[in-house]
Image (cartoon, rainbow, N blue to C red; front, top):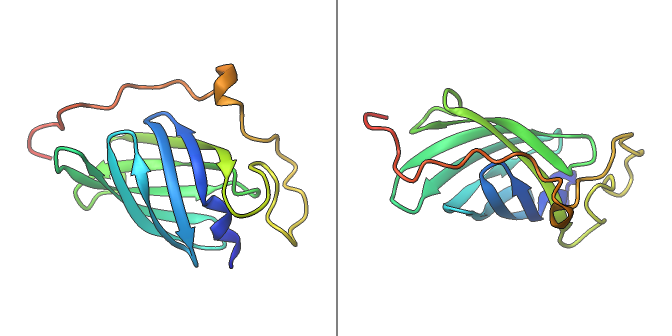
Length: 137
C-alpha cells in the first residue's frame, strides 16, 4: 500500500460530494453528478477521467497536499484536463488508514490543518456544476 492509497474515502468538493476508492494508486469512484477513474502517485499527483451522468466526459489534473487530505487542480472537457475551472476537495472521511488530515504512516507531520468539517459548514464554496455541458466541447 503506497501513500496515495490514503486518498481512499469520502470528500467534499466545490462540485459536490466525491467518493474515491484507491488501491495501489488506481482510482475508481463517484462524484455528485457521475463517476471518476484514474490514478494517483505517491508524490501526490492525481489524474482523473470524469463522466457526467449525461455521458459527457473530461479529465482533471489534481495535486494532493503533504497529508493527502486535500486535493486541488483543474478540469476540462474531453481530453483536456484544464480550461474549464478549478476542482478542490477536502477529505472528510479516510477509509482504511489514518483519519483524514493525518499524514500517512511513516511520514512526518504535514504541518497543515486537517480538512474542515463539512457538517459544520466550512466546506469550500460551491459553484453549481453545469447540468448541461457547453456545446461544442
